[in-house]
Image 1 (cartoon, rainbow, N blue to C red):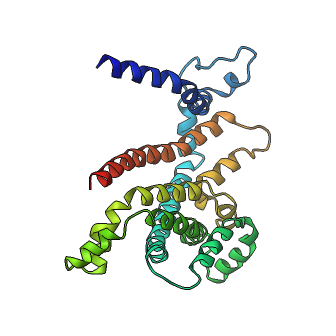
Image 2 (cartoon, helix red, strand yellow):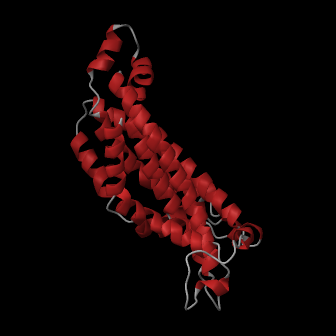
Image 3 (cartoon, rainbow, N blue to C red):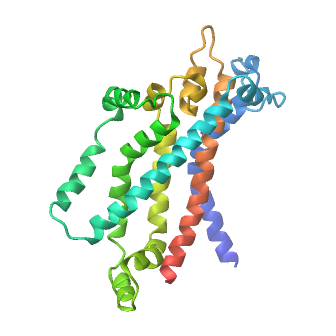
Length: 276
């Protein structure tokens, strides 16, 4: 028992520099977000504010409309992730399990599409959604984001599906299970770690996307969190770093929470997959 504790202590000591690097931006944001404007730029700078000033967070939600922007980002990111994963799973399964001509060419095409910046297609997307009457519509961003990140999801899932032995599905077929039943009951539970990682990356990419959100959502009430934070920096006479840091801290919390939750779930999924 003592040897395990000693090893654990050595591991934490070894990881402490990396932990400091990871937590330093959050500590900086929290320190500035809890200060008044007069306390930020002083000759005797301090990490901890003289008093906990929570009005920065209150002003964000009551006067700046950041709560609505946060909801818009969550709605778009969750919708784009679900749509991308729903289409990517059967597509990746087909690429992994079926024999078809030109499969390697298609996989290369998927990789090439990731080299194209979304900003190149913004004008065309704007005209397309304007013709469909979907400007200032959150669903337009869900469709656009899922279209851009779907190729990445298919590529990731297809690579993970290739690592799962075909013998498991063939054994289920011999036992009388249909292809759909074997896919849902046998194949998908083993793919949970790969699906979770792909969903996480898709969510983060959609959450941080800026250019398409700025172009498609013209009304202030429809803005996403990254766009709203960018507009907070564009005040006429001064930059309110206390408000900006409070908004940035709030915007990073959902991603950190989802990452931590999925990380724990991945460990359980890997353990279950190994036992099976």
